Amino acid sequence: MRRVNSVLVLADGATFEGHAAGHLPEEGYTSGEFVFNTALSGYQEVITDPSYAGQVIAFTYPHIGNYGVTPLDDEAPRPWCRGVVVRDLSELPSNWRSAGPLDEFLRQHRIPALVGVDTRRLTRHLRSHGALPGAFGHADPTIVSAAARRAVGTDGTDYVTMVSTDRAYALGDGDLHVVAFDYGIKTTMVQQLARRFRLTVVPSSTSADEVRELRPDGVFLSNGPGDPAALGANVAVVGDLLGTVPIFGICLGHQLMCMALGGSTFKLPFGHHGSNHPVQDLATGRIEITAQNHNYAVAPGSLSRGVVSHVNLNDGVIEGVASGSDRCFSVQYHPEAGPGPHDARYLFERFESLLRTGTLESV
Image 1: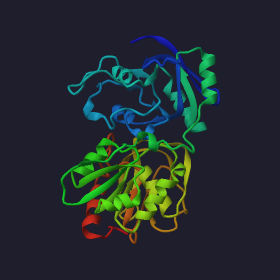
Image 2: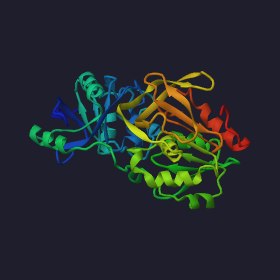
Image 3: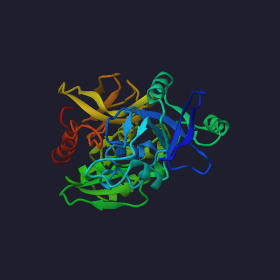
Image 4: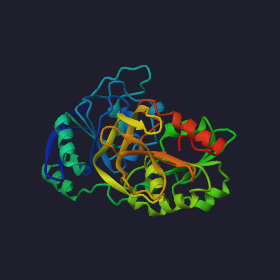
């Protein structure tokens, strides 16, 4: 691996040293909002999750890339993150599924990386000061520092339009038809839905009338990047559909559904990014370990209708909402996993049950 000195500078001036890996941008740096992910594996799925658009991912697990990469683990056709920061990037992957090393994958997709960083110190800094914009690169440190001062976070920005499909496509052959809004939909989500339903994935800009013309039995709201408060037009579409067709939302889709139910959102200090978050189903008392990736959450007490169905046991954040009268439910976490545990995949069965019976369980 090339040993090109590189520096990371956050907007508050905190500086970290390492060396460059992956793609070397011509301008000598990349910038974005820095967040950390605590997953021990699944780095390729994390990097290719469109929800990271506009962000730089710092992995807390120190050894990344040891089992290489494979097209089978891609969650999108390309990564949308701005960069990757790791402590130790493996140069010799060992796994029968591997189609090549992570460094080559990053170069292929033009994703810059910073290696050899004290990621423990970086994570502790972000925990104390929140997700921060910044920059890293191999350019002169004064240039990188200037880029860090200009860098912006994800607040108030619509990244969904950037990552969404530009045309509808269909999969699956079930007897029930589901229309899925692509706000940045992950491949594993598409697979879980296509196993159960005849699925039509539509662009994020699709109107409520266009959805109704497809005559769906249900509507799915996907994950996606950025600030939900910047997506007023999308919220209006969801609000138009509420009560007319069963709806299931995940992550950003959860936030948009809750906003359509009268709720509001706020930005978490450093977000939830990882695959070991304990969540409790308030109706059953069941606790599930979940995969999560979000910087924003639904504000407590802000809903005009609906009930809170799930909460995060680490910090009490709302993790699920349901409305029996509107025939809709949503979760903040990722039941499809990819990566992560499969504890919550029962929610796809709950969605199918809602479509077949017209009644939402446990509400």
